[in-house]
Length: 470
Ligand code: UN1
Image 1 (spheres, helix red, strand yellow):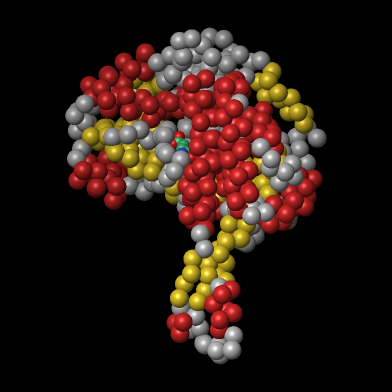
Image 2 (cartoon, rainbow, N blue to C red):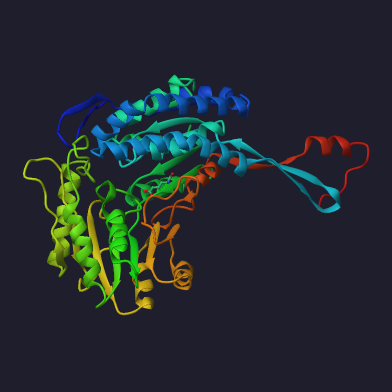
């Protein structure tokens, strides 16, 4: 057992200590419990999840406070995360009911079949640190509704929020062994993924970690694997009638949550020559943004990034862009103390040769100037990721063109790249993930369809003679 700690990024205060968990023991407990949970009527599981929503609602302030402390996210933003946890229950109930409702099909010669769903058994959920409650919750709730047991490993950067989320589920009446929290780093994640007692895994995190899981799962194709990974998301501003509004969208896209969102805009693509006014407006807004402690008054727009290592990495990334010919429009600055507060940074990378197609998970916006819209589309698609993209400006016809050409799971118009609604399918293509593993379609990963006899039809056919169903 390794002992673990978590410190508040904004202050360095020790927040949590604990030991890394035992994947074998937790999977064994979950395996012992899932069949009884699956045998409960769906209505009972729905009732339990609704109680969970009420329990969370009743402890909103404490939970938001904990999220703010452990992630450094402003308190107002942490409160919206708690709201999202609550909302996910209703959304998952309707998604699960819709995606898995029993269907009757009529085949040739009157053969009737029903399509019904079964839970997989024991699912692991590996959560990220940027939404340490909302995103794993978006996998845990549908998994439990479907009748699975869940072993949840929070990010090693947010163990306290993960532990609290599971405590709230237990408080609401989910049996102790049906949802387990196992703490630990990547080694524990790998042990969970490799465990023969596991039926599937739902992952949210970096492409590097997700691809490693994908390789590991290649040996066990029967196990479900949902991957929600990062993005190198483009925001194209084209003939925007309202420059200020476009700048607000760009700033929200790039710097909300200190840029630590999978859907954050990393690349701003603009028309060469027509971009100066927009960039000035973005710089003006970025300079006014308050970067401060999550509980500070007035409320900050963004807090620190998650830890010193993340801040170091972002500084290194920014420096690498400068060295390779990037022109700084607004420098990445770090606070004088040793806390990982960074200011929003903007850099023109048009002339950088061989741009790296990696996810810089923080407040760095790269600007790319292009001569025409075809070039804008080509730049937007010049990534192996495909999570979110947005067009600001243009006409419905231009958005149609954008939509038809862009490869991404979320394609917005006149809206930020981030903030995708939870009641829509969510996920990406390419390095961003496999299909739509989150939000509305998460239910698809939690139960599998079974082609079944429809009991009534089968009974009726007895004595009539069995028709060849083909
Ligand atoms: C984002 O756009 O910042 O429920 C994340 C979900 C999504 C997450 C969106 N709404 O999984």
